Amino acid sequence: MQKALETVHVDPAILKYIVEIVQRTREDHRVTNGASPRASQSLFKTGRAAAAIAGRNYVIPDDIKGIALQIISHRINMKPEAKIRGITGMHIVRKILSEVPVPVIQPA
Image (cartoon, rainbow, N blue to C red; front, side):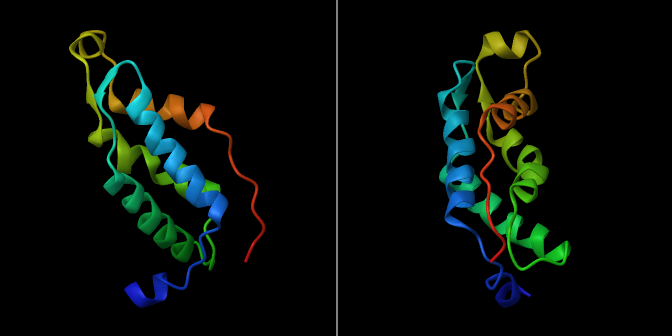
């Protein structure tokens, strides 16, 4: 199965999209520690799996958006002030996903 997933195409624009999402978790003023490069790797691998499950041999932005909350939100450490206000990693990731421009790709 892992070999099959390696054939799923990931456009360079999708790679940039993944990196941008993860990078922004580190830049938010309410966060002490954002998602690590391992979060990027997880988004990449899980995005491929999501595409394969959907019957495609290429990843689309919606594959990444659909898994980002689960992959990234628990990897974010909030500042105490943010925790007191009830802000969670889910809030941060939702905001980031609404702000990061979604790439337009052509199927491979």
